Length: 427
Ligand code: SF4
Ligand code: SF4
Image (cartoon, rainbow, N blue to C red):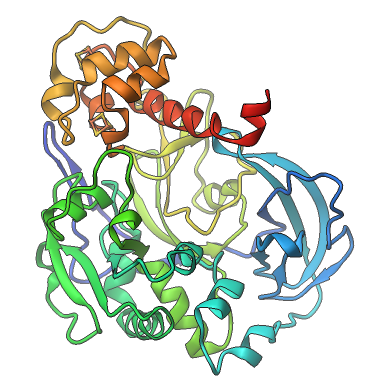
């Protein structure tokens, strides 16, 4: 257990806190009473589900509700499916929640093991897309060779979160194995591991170039890494992939290394858990564990108006039900006391200019916010650089009127994307 906080926040600079040389121990959460896996929903309701209530599942078994859709989740336990129900995630994304009741003697599914002797990108896409860290394998496969560089995050993009840093420092052997497999299946030979501060020491030859970034937020966000490490500015409306660069978390690479070393698809998630009093823990738990089980393991209580944040303090989002499950990309859970929670207001912008001064993308945020508040998203994109925003959240952090600018920006981008879908065009 870490006795003191491993982060520090000081305005106006927000520092990434570096882990101590002697890493804290991980704390394992007891096996949960049930597991909930979020499977992307099929929009075509006439397609029947390939799995039903009462079906037996093995540990490590691939559950694909609609096999022609290529989506799947991996069961971390042996047991039976106890329910299939609709679930609405962030920004109204639809899932089917698969609940599994663990039970009986553990049976390990060996389908992956039988095929792992000849690794291919297709095999990785077939089995490791929902492994811990959510490896962006489809993106790599769909790029048609456009990806020339893979960047591995050995530093978490948000302050206070130390999951990637911890994994990169504690599991180098699996990291090296994952890098070797990634190179072999993708043909991408330029792999960069991003670290910060002194942690650049000690990596030896892991098959990647090790690059340091400043331990000051937002240096580890992808757009900043592109600029500061690769010397490329991502143009507005373009992505890092458009410039031939794909980002993996250290955990995603380790999932690949560990799958091929053990023959089993990993299902155990590492995450930073921060209690209301600020005590941080490095927690290991099954994907699908209800957040409430983690809180219970640390005797943490949540009172009215306290907040539970998934992700970091700058870019994370609040959840309101303890039943929410840990997902492959849940890198942190932060419980915030109601008295310390950042509040938002409906005060008007006073044109102080703080947001403009701090914005790393040099956006006229004070103007942008006026269009966002009026739901004029297209004008915000056309005239006020909405798509230049790198989603760091610094504008919200400094805003004296407590306008939730970052949330407005995310919503605007989501609505503009949604407007491009066929359903929106037909509406
Ligand atoms: S979130 Fe705010 S501060 Fe950050 S890039 Fe976007 S507009 Fe600028
Ligand atoms: S920081 Fe807030 S109040 Fe100040 S100019 Fe920006 S949006 Fe307006």
